[in-house]
Amino acid sequence: MTTEGSPDEATALRDRRVIDAGAQVQETVDDLLTYMDAETAAREFLDLSNNPRGDVYGGVGAHPLYEYKRAGADGVPAAEGDLTEAIGFDAVERQCAAQGIDAAVVNPTLNLDLAEVNNDRFAVALASAYNDWLLDGLDGRDRLVGNVVVAPQHPERAAAEIDRVGGEAAVAGVHLPVTGVTHPLGHRAYDPIYAAAEDHGLPIVVQPTVGASSLHQQFYESAYFAQDYVMHQPFLALRHLTSLMFEGVPVRYPDLDVVLLDCGVGWAPYAIMRLDDHYLELGYEIPALNKLPSEYAAESVYWGTGPVHDAGTHPDSRYLARAIKMVGPDNVLFTSDLPHPRTDTPAGVDTALGDQLDADAATAVFSGTAARVFGL
Image (cartoon, rainbow, N blue to C red; front, top):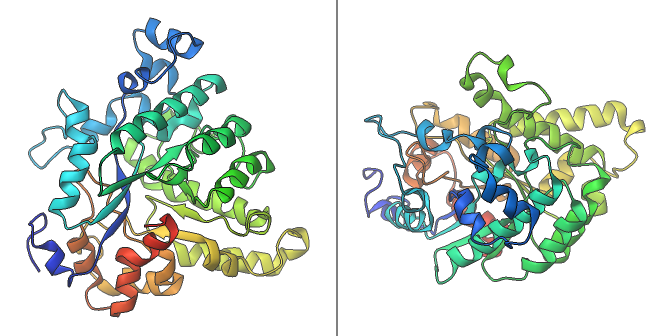
């Protein structure tokens, strides 16, 4: 196995195509302002604010934690000064090339906290501005596509936004922010979003993050950020997956796919087992479903591999491979979380898997599943 980051990593992956379903770019408030109508209240408010990032976004994304939490081994922040250059489209594309990643689906950063914006008109305006910025940034890039963002605060406007940009060639999916949403994702309030995404053949992408109201608890009740960082993402994903299943979204929208990012795949067999077990026990109160949740999950739920980080995190290669086999390789996608310094590389995940997956299963994880779900 070659050294991570070397140009020979693709060879280390046995010449497989690699698609990264979980790359990120960082949009700044200044980036978004460029794409906002100067006559709107949202633009005027942001122009007048001395701290637009903190005044509008209510969660951790309101603080420059993203840049400093992911510092390199020498302690230097990943981004100093020009954030666009440090973790923008150019940086992601360069790092993908260096890691042997042939194509990547980029996701937002600041707008992971869009659901914590209290003013729904501001949220709609920010989502639209992000999508225009995203499409401009992806223009002319063969290696990158992206997930557009919609505001869950206003499902009808979110559906209209999907109709506005969903047909663009560079759009691979719909990123639905969940950190701080009022209703869990199975609520019928979100039906306009699901209907529009299904109409355009776009998956719904769910990427929980740490926020002030992630689980309707006050952020200050955890003594350390690390406490929330461990639990918020998988716990939020489980909450919303349970809601999606038991409230019948796969029945109402049978052609809609849901992709779960940043939570890993190790917890997936446990989650599916509990869904099935409690459906069998309490199915009388879940009339929306016609079959086991595991059957719906096999048809429409997809799990990102990350975070894996390296073989040292899971020294027994059977751990990751067994989880993938239990869920099904056709429901698992490789995700890196580039461009953070602490990311998963294709070679690192390949090492973590060892020889536990056969060639067909490994091909599904590294490219086949993402190609099918995102139309790549």
